[in-house]
Length: 313
Image (tube, rainbow, N blue to C red; front, side, top):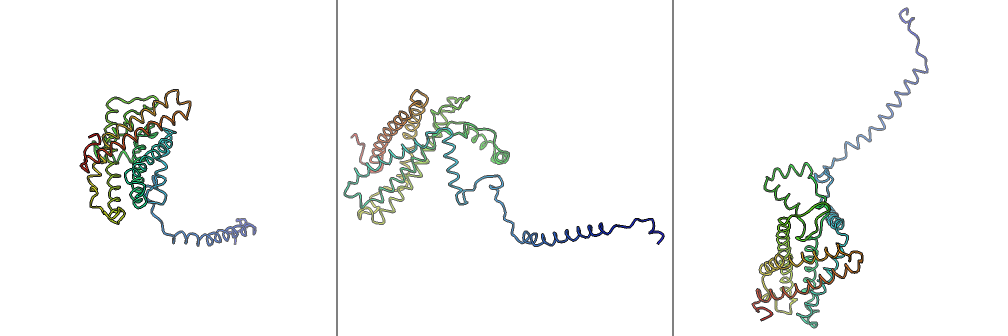
């Protein structure tokens, strides 16, 4: 008792406050325990590698649509008239294709052979979208900068040749006659390589779209949509695909780059102040290109696949 005399007694209020804080802390822990248990019970979903980098996966719903939208936005940032040119090209080419189908099949047989016409139109639209987009200016190329560290590491694993090829392709214009970005320039070597790269791209587009279209045509003919003749009299898929590749990679790639150059000259001239004049230039150039290209392809098809000789002879 003597030892406790020098110790000041603890006021009852402090004891109560300490006891109250202990009870409130215990109550909070008891309330948060079920929440922590729920968090432990919830399965942890692994995050894909693409989502960790902030990328959009094309396997997810809407991923492919988002990718296409980013592609279109990139073209529009470099050329605000990109969608207008694409609409003019697909509209005029579809009209020429439909007129050619009516002329070759006849209006009377058009109803019974409608699947062939639709197949030709769909193939035409897809091919037009591919070839117009391929030579359209790209804002991402104009603002090309250093790659991310992960991409550089992956390129290092591929080797010096792959890294060099990627750098060369990234430095090329999308078409041979594309205007350089502000403050930059393209060398004659780069423009020649761009023409070669465009020819390869167009050849691959023609090979894929032409082969797919002919395969669908053969399937429709075998199903009885060709007036009972079947697919016996039709050319094979590979000859048609190779003809499309040769046509698109050769003559068509040069013509479309010339059309793009003509539109670029009009946009940098005094006609730029009149949007209607620019639209008229695009429509006239693309209409002439489509009419000439359709006649040339029919001649090549008749001569090389049907053995009917040149249209001039």
